[in-house]
Length: 147
Image (cartoon, rainbow, N blue to C red; front, side, top):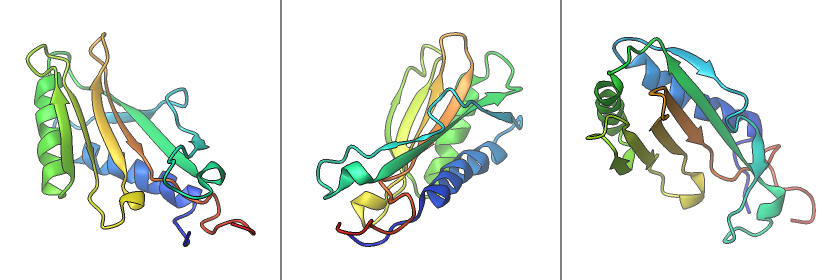
């Protein structure tokens, strides 16, 4: 398999998806990247990729702080509109009527193994989080010897 972005580049891209999304919101939230919410690289699980076990995906998740309670649907609608303006594909939306909106989607790419996925979730306490996950990448950007 060819070269990929490296683990640090994948992390930076995932964080940029979150930061750019938050920057488009009103009121402007403060991002609180939570290290307990998958902010580490994990082993790639794509069965279709040769040597996937030697690759990683990178997850980033941030809580959106400073959003007044009761604004979850408003913020979710802003996020969805922003993602659509970026050309991102919205995969699913749920729970808007219940006031606990969820959105999932992905960045379009010709190579299905270069797609970032993302999500907007509302916790049971009303807190909002945005997460982004990289595609499978080589930790250093290049396949290890003998791959």
